[in-house]
Image 1 (cartoon, rainbow, N blue to C red):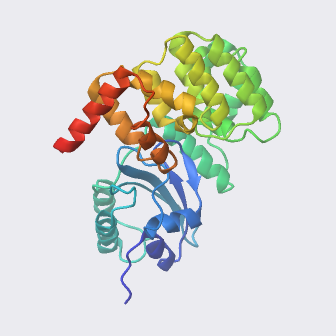
Image 2: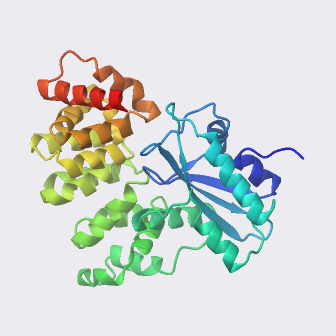
Image 3: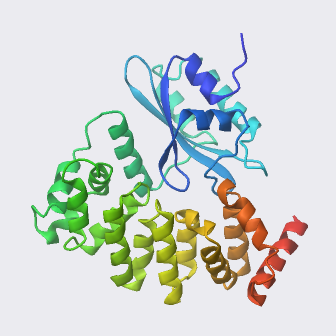
Length: 338
């Protein structure tokens, strides 16, 4: 019998259908050709975070019962999946389930599989958006919380009743941006929804591709809201490089590129760093942080394939400040000691 070495092989051999979602930086679908290249070690994982690929596999068989694995697998220095841990996970699954991952298993088996070393639990904000996105892509009904969130965001209930709606309901509304009334409803809600609800909407939008009208609304809010709320609105612009760059420039002008803002940019708005001016602003602000934070964030974002060459070129930039030069020197020192 042919040895199964990839997750794609395993799930295909088991006669299941499946979808892949990145769960590390932004919750987003990974198409099958891309995932096959990742699995075949011919392409680096596109959205690495802290040296790992964090992704979800949603799979189902003829019974239409859906199953989910949240996996966190290490990457090598080139950003490729490390084969050994993946093989270990596949062998563990085959040992527990045979070659049918959708079979009914005992509670003891469920507990064993839930606690394997490659599992992780997404934060509630990501989990809510993931659940909403998967249900929509599979043509399933939204959660029971959807209707209440819709009523609140469409001003059919009092603004003061914001505590009655849940994050899952807001996520269900947000993933339906392109359905009738939803876009205008979300745009208008920024004029009257409670601060807490606006933040929750931003936490959902950061994982979605939003259109120009909503981008303009969020960008205007970013400029006018209180300083402590600005990072949330910046995150909501994550799908658009240009507006993210404008948002970062705004924070820089107000000297608000603190630790929280820099982590936000690295985790969500990293595509803005393709712009040379924004990249310089970001690195200069990062160099003023504690050395361990500079080293950690730089190591994290330099692993992103679309940024790697650009960031490495900054190490040789003759126009960088003395502060940034010192931070880079400290990074090299730590690297040599490892």
